[in-house]
Length: 270
Length: 217
Picture 1: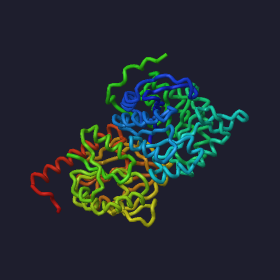
Picture 2 (picture 1 turned 30 degrees about the vertical axis):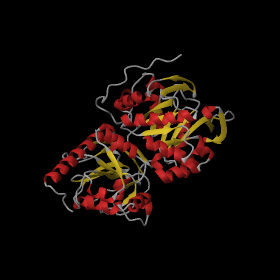
Picture 3 (picture 1 turned 45 degrees about the horizontal axis):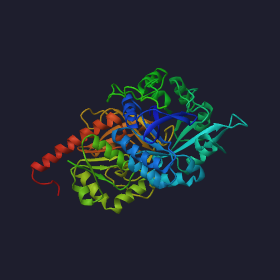
Picture 4 (picture 1 turned 90 degrees about the vertical axis):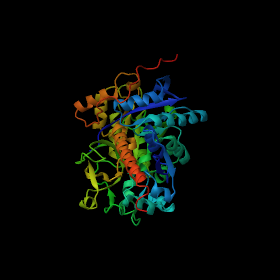
């Protein structure tokens, strides 16, 4: 049976990895190419690269980053951020992405997922859903956009079903409430999504410990994504995997690092 | 030795090119049937639906050329949909004939907990001397070939994986390898497989050169 996947995520802006809390307060977290190579050598099963720049110039630079990362990376690469058209998706694949994550544009026009699925295949078509608990009823989830500044009022679980029907082959589910907090994934969100959708769910937002990851997998996630804990060298992919094996999960283990790992984090700019 | 990359679509072409480049090999994109038939080494990096994949091959006249080169045992690496296109047909696209190089049909990967089957899975391979060896490789697919004695009868060595039930992870015969997984995305496991395949292709190309003629023409 397929093994549990660990997916480090690089949020990239202007050619650098950045990381914030609840999508805000971004700080520098290194060079994406060095990070990508280091994570593969630690045993990462896939890599996710999200372009968090907000400008057309930033989009061009993100394509360059994708190409540079692809040149060194021998595992699957998902790229998201600013994908608005089929052409955007095709440009990312040509630059070296294997899967494309669509977020806001699919909300406005679910047919975009269908177009990408029909042209590039369901295995390329990921819907990224940023979900927050609603103020009125914290047991419900709504889709948020624009870094969480806008609450759409759209039910996140219903949207997941709709997106899969439209063509999404996988769901990247980020909890806005937990992102960057280290409080653990939002398990209720993952349970609801995994029951509602037949496709694999990638848990994102809030991971601090291997126990958090184990809980997300038990809640129905097929893969767990994390950023801060790897960037800040709190742990390595290899260490997380050996902990998860001890917790009873089937993981792909790499025997020895293939490449020298990145020795330290880049200093934070003020 | 250059490797000819049948570039009928865009999905995973960049990843395959990058994987070859890391091994110091240039991937030359082509949709020319004569090149496809006689090139030293050909990669079929199929991704997408079965019908779209067959249509793309047939539009360029590549189907016949590909079938001929595989039957002649020329070094060929088919990936993911590329494997399925070698079968007789697929549940995914009823009514569309495949190349029929493999005497089996492509069916849905029923029994898998979730579809598409995304992720790393173990390759069970009895053979130690084959190009495809035991290890873990990356899969991204919804349809598959099931193990069948007909494959062995046709001279194919079969490696399997399990997702709900056993399915064909790869088949190989001489210098022809067709993998359901993605070697180009399978880290060191995939790199080592591509390396072994390239070595066999180089050896075969050297024999052809010393014989002074291209065989089977």
